[in-house]
Length: 309
Image (cartoon, rainbow, N blue to C red):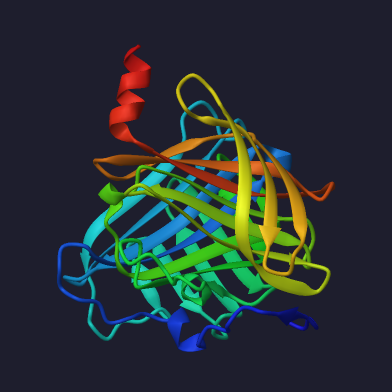
């Protein structure tokens, strides 16, 4: 990354790009997600891997959207025993091979199966944003800490007899510590980029009677904390995301406008209590066209109630 920028956000130690030592409780968990958006093909997806406190790992890789067909393509593995010495410089979970490069700068993923063949190379375009850099820290039922980062992707996706070039915006996150999904009533987690030096991330969480906000605005060569965000979410009758519009306020006193239109949705169910609706989006930041992703968490009791009405 060769940018000149200023920021009021504390830098993350690069050591946190690698694997952490977890506790042994039932909620102990470390995970990484790398997002896929191919808007010209109407395809979204993600590459996701995790490990729990017992040393059992898993992975989930999916491609979905109109460019894939009415049903998503998904491969998921769980309960894979890993060596305590295995790290993210050479991380293998069944068909997934993940490799860190320069810490907090680059990473590469290969995934080969009968469903699809993916080569995904991530290069950061801005410093990693750690939730611990916020004045109130990272919510401890979400993770001991967590970082988000924008970048560019290169590589390819081979699926259904086609080879599609991966070239464009990319986002990743990495969390470690614990994850108690049941404490979360609702959230909106959004990433968007409109060039290598214009991007936003915001996460607005409703939990235990409180509203929590984390995120950053990257524009005009300055990265600042999100301090507030007004969100207008439009959803279908089944709660799936249609559009998300926002006005974002940051610690540098700036106001940023955001619009996102979803072109696909995939329901990810990491816990019996909640579902995450994952959507690739066509985005605009201050009127500049870009892309990104939106994740909306709903409690399964509400989804069931709405679907049965």
